[in-house]
Amino acid sequence: MKAAGPGPPGADAAALVRVLVVDDQLLVRRGLVKLLELEPALEVVGEAASGEAALHLIRDRRPDVVLVDARMPGMDGIELVARLAAEQPGVRALILTTFDDDEYVVGGLRAGARGYLLKDASPEELADAVVRVAAGETVLAPAVTGRVVAALRAPAAPPPEAAAPDGLSARETEVLRLVGAGATNREIAARLFIGEGTARNHVSSVLRKLGLRDRTQAALYAAERWPRP
Image (cartoon, rainbow, N blue to C red; front, side, top):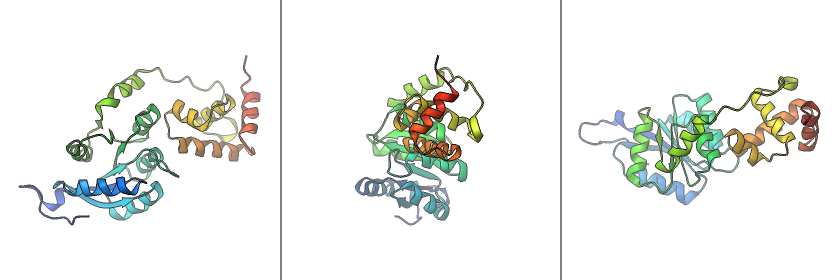
């Protein structure tokens, strides 16, 4: 990682955009670090292989922008973005990934990401996106812009037909209803535009709050509460 030093003419060290790179693949992560270090307007202040490690580094390194891979083991990129929005609102997240599925694109933006790029972006496009996100802009890869517009135009999901049971949040109630319909974690994530890890966490929370042992009991509970016609 380069030390803060002279930037472009007229720039000073304080103007450098501080970037943290988060990707579980070592070669990809190191490649991104090397690439960003070549940019005079950027300063790489750290790298992390997981969402959990990133949260610890962010508190210490105080980046302006976190470059996040969407799909990682454990805490995935969507969940990390949501945690950042809640815990570090001054830090902006830019998702850089090979995945352009709707659950990642729309889910990432709804979680609080300020940009979404695919890994086939050029080095110039990546550097420009980091600077623009740091300045408060939203940056989208051309390939995903259309689906974001379509998602925004889609009608909102109808509210649950009954009040949330036994202290569940509105989102947990949605998850419970989908479990009752036989949906997998991945299907729940796609339906609600959240990460698969986030969906799994919601299912676990539902089971704990309702005192249920497994998904089968949750499905039976949902069937009793919301019987199908």
